[in-house]
Length: 120
Image (tube, rainbow, N blue to C red; front, top):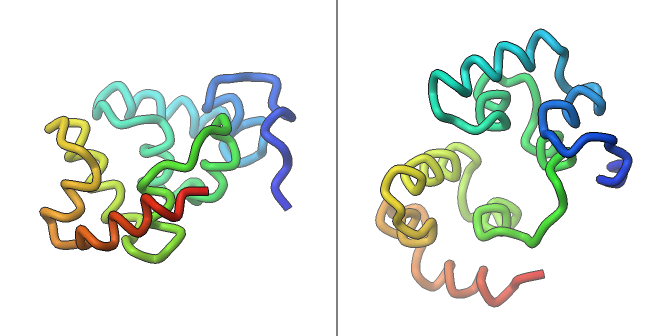
């Protein structure tokens, strides 16, 4: 069972990952350097380096509403790799995530409508 988000003393994701025991100080330093060099988010760097799982990262992120990508993942509509590729494209293009996923052929318009209706 995942511990509640309020157990963390810090709001910074890197510190939260250390407090949870998912990252070491050395890994955090390396990830911060890679973040500066690549423009990726800290969590993305850690996932790409396979230092933690998506579930571990999500546990340490501040709670918020369920996002489209997370819902599509949860329903098995897309893979984690497809989500990251689409998010990177979105960051550079500004196109909506659902439109990117449809344009790449990874989901259909009907799947997108269904997922949007199924919101938690």
